[in-house]
Length: 267
Length: 267
Image (cartoon, rainbow over all chains, first blue to last red; front, side):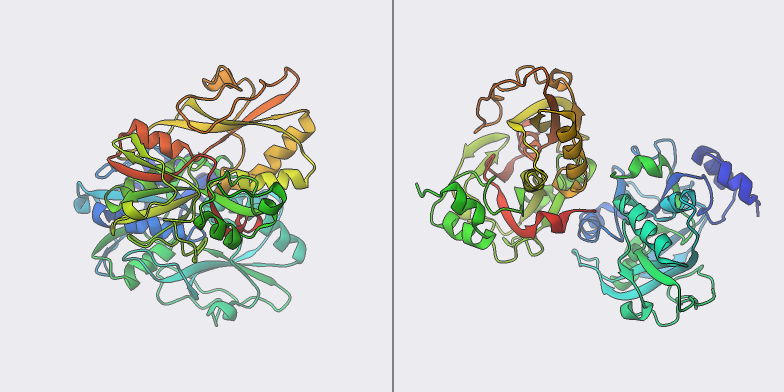
């Protein structure tokens, strides 16, 4: 597999990264393209597009919609007009009736004329702003919670969140402030405190229902643990709702947009 | 017609106001129910619901969506579950092929099982916060601009805005700050400066394409004029796009929600 150093990855433009992805790079995008907005991707046939868009509208914390393609058009005209959503994500997941049938590195063979693509803003985008404010944290992967999403048509399921642990109140408060500026990138936390409150009993042990998550040391008692809604909520909705056909990115392998996170901020 | 004093109107709860509306009150809601979120309403058959929801998603300044009903259900479950969208707005507009065919005080006879209702947050809601900050302004009604909306399916048209004129920079800056907290209620201004920049040559003379607007003195040279996107954009889109069937509220006669504007703020 193609290797990228962390320094190279951070300094790349989204266009440069896409060229590497087309050459076969399948790595994690979180620390690539410093400052640019990254997004989860969902593709569904037009038949399910209204239900999915409504699901997003009713669940704006996990599923803030950045862009929607025309049916059959593989280009996100507002977020990255030159990118091709079928080839420019490192790794995809293809769902049939709620089962993952393949995790390919492109989806050209699955593409149909009635497909509609959605980009969902990702909180990895504003973690650059935390770094810029000299805030440090420990990150835990994605977990299913007991928080139900508001259903819409065929789509239902629990909210998925990411956890960050902060050493002190100052850093935690700044993280609330900074993430609040970015409602299109999941916005502020959905929970502060004991992860067990929202159904996560063993933070640090990966959630078996979400692939590509890694183990980590559990938080220390003095740390402040907060969770932010996560776009993987849409993948779990595909599973729970047994959607006949849906394609998404693979966790950690995002669509990198041409828009800076700051461009997407509301204030 | 039933009369309400300004003091009575401001002090009412949304539930009390709806009772008055059901008894035949057809007045302007802007200064009723102090602090509560008000919304523009749009009803379309399910066939056009995806295109309209996508139009809103692509044009979040004029059309921020607060709630969407299930097809055939006349209740906005999240914003005002006990209200009936067919009777609880003072006055409606019924469009066929882009023409207004009636402005009834209820839409019971037009209701169909496939209808989907949308609530679009209105900036009248955060003007209470301007008052609370001791800011004064002169208000102009709604005007079509030369700013194009991003089309979506059958829906296209120009952005409609409201103008406010402020006496000094302090008040204008505070208005930018306060409105920015409310992206679901049109958010910050879309333009600062000469209204002619966006196609409005005679501010103060009502736009003939928008009913129920009143004349006002033009701004003074020292005043700072800013415009905010307006939900009447959806009505002009109905006209421009010749949508076969669509129902909206009448300008100034809004749906009053059970949620306080502060509950809808992002920060």
